[in-house]
Length: 267
Image (cartoon, rainbow, N blue to C red; front, top):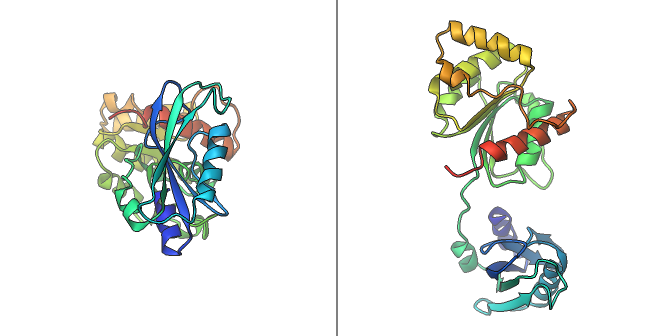
């Protein structure tokens, strides 16, 4: 959202930043959560419900305020707004300025992901990841498989890499990265898999395919002398159990949920 705030500021669109300054008791979002409000748009969420409607209305009435006119508003969610959370939320309202943008902290990504494969499943996964605070390197040897455009502009957290020796990119990932391998060829999948497992410092590694593919890969990796401890950490098939369906969008939902479970936790 900070990227969007920078774009709004650059084009001179008046806006107000609404920040959750403090909470007491049960509240829909934590302190530090932000949203942007202009006359026509609201980006992000401070928790939805009556609180957010009131905040958007107040922010729009406050659009004429200038730099330094920040103010705070306290909301008792139960008595004042009728929300069942029952806690208290204090919001700060500030005109979007360069100074406000400078003080906006950079959000650490939930995880760094190398995603190999720009086919249907890869595209569906990236569409979901483009809504999350993560860092993605999307890698394929086929330039034409990457989308030529993206709704509302290309997501800044996604980097597209078109290279010939895609498996060589494994060495460039940071320590503790996550990996998803879902290319168009099994031999390429195997080369990338071997590079990831030999490196061994991954938080999560998912390989698309069936249990049969997993067994075949295990035999080949063992024959190549890959450590069994690393092989045992390979996730294949991918996706949280219990989500049925082979449509790319269904697979993407299950895989992103698994990434958040295993790759998005504390380091």
